Image (cartoon, rainbow, N blue to C red; front, side, top):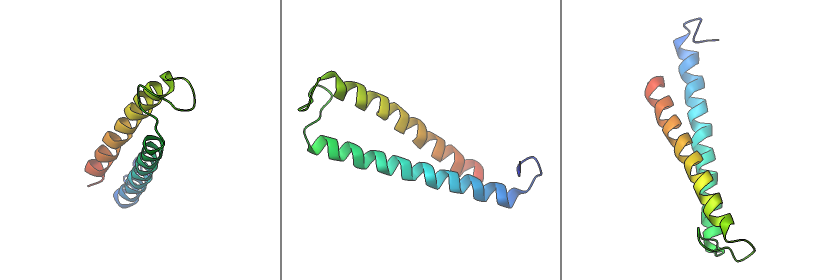
Length: 80
């Protein structure tokens, strides 16, 4: 709504806030990946159950994390 009103300052601040929250999400995802990898989960191996878990988990969350990272970069460029 602020963009439609041409309020550039608030629009840029909200875009920066969104970028910060997206970056926070990617950091939490990196922490989660690190935790699982140190506990032995790999794309081809899962010590707690089906081996397919690792391949599905890393593929799905990897694509999502890449999507969020590109969105964060886009938001920073546009907010600038």
